[in-house]
Length: 451
Image 1 (cartoon, one colour):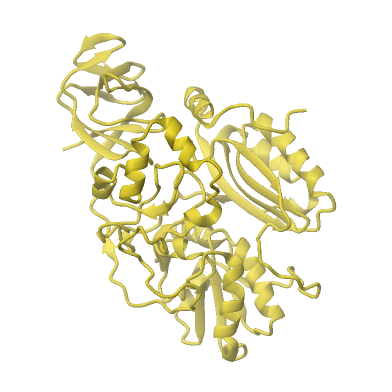
Image 2 (spheres, helix red, strand yellow):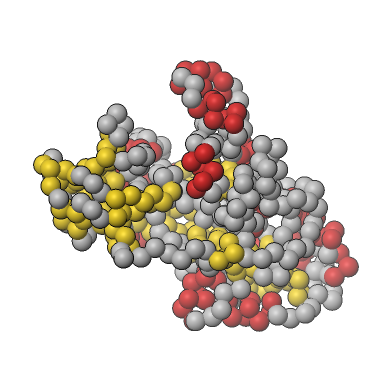
């Protein structure tokens, strides 16, 4: 009985590309009394593995919290698999704003003490006694009420790249830290103010709203479905988005763009930027914001020390990181001493209101058409191979190669081989290769830039 992954992330990425199926990235949660979380975990893995579900799922005696991806063709079979459980019948599935076939590359279903770590030990706390759910239109209206206090229930590294206007953003690393801080700072407003909360998909607010009601707050509201569902409703109903910037997500993408506003800065040079990356030094892997210029100059690293490390032989790198466990330290990007420009300068743990900040509009998008995807990279000759899926390209065309690690690279095709023969044009179905001044990855997309 297979209850584990048998493929590496790289092997899985190749399989996804070869399958050529569109995948959906989605998330959901449910609070429920689960008597045997381990058995529940095993049942889910056995049901989802044949459906090619990949993702990060936590189960506990208090419920389930899931972020995952699956082939769009398997969506209804997947829906049937979760609705076999009474507590998940009719459950809301938050579909990602932006899709990426490689958002997850393995299936992990873990048993935890809690699906949202809250640090609470209180048998009288009823997690099901929640605040009032609000849809996007209602949420926007309550934001304008002068008696409303709106609080971002996410961590500092999430809220710094995007947030609701007028929101208060606790300067915390974890959800459990935010609960006592908010309670203390808003204690005098338990009766006279409306406490309005939001998070990514709703799961943290679900527990937080119950917590604050438990602590005596009388007017507690939460954004139904979080930022993900809010964005869907805003688009569907033609509403104005009161959320600006990007929504941080915990998968390969690291963020979904909601509006063109850039409300954060590169942690290395201070230039307006909201692109997260992980330091390429495997012994560090710090999560931080890095612009394209700094990415090139620092070779994807967070510091000069890490640049030096990545140039060492692989065995020396392994020796350096042997026995070191960074854990959640990789998320302390706003606090790291190696970063010059920090988006949050306040002391850790202090509850701070939003300071006026000028949002910079994202640069105008390049007009382009999709051509195909990267299928291989030959490092010694520095040649990239692409499968042409739509349209055509020819020598002299200006192209854009885009990927989460590669970034956005523009160049002009000078010479190319099509199906292993020198040619000036490649059309749908062809495999073409040409020389590149940078490395590409399997998930990279190829576009032709239009005049």
